[in-house]
Image (cartoon, rainbow, N blue to C red; front, side):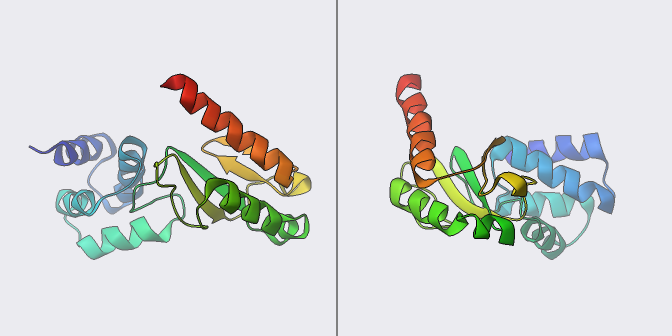
Length: 159
């Protein structure tokens, strides 16, 4: 049995095989695999006895689920009007410049994925971003460069 097939089977055992189990199963796959592959979606459809189109529709509907591999560090920049008024566009330009990647893409080394997201709940301290589960607020281009350097330095010391 393939690793993905076993993972889906285990998650179905844990969460059940009803339609309301679909989202928790997809979240479990995302947590374990960092994305939901086509193979995983087909296995979920088989396990829950629903169409692959239903699984794909759910997996692509939610912004916190991903069907393509992401970087080790996922940077989500708040795209609310409040953060935009506080300079969100400058922050995105700086991140694109520092990471040498466009919004929505992953760096060549697979370390960083740059995305926009809906409200992070930090509008009073905007512009804001989230790197994995760590929030950063009151961003400036200089602060962004420092934060990215810290992550890169951690990677150098970890290897």
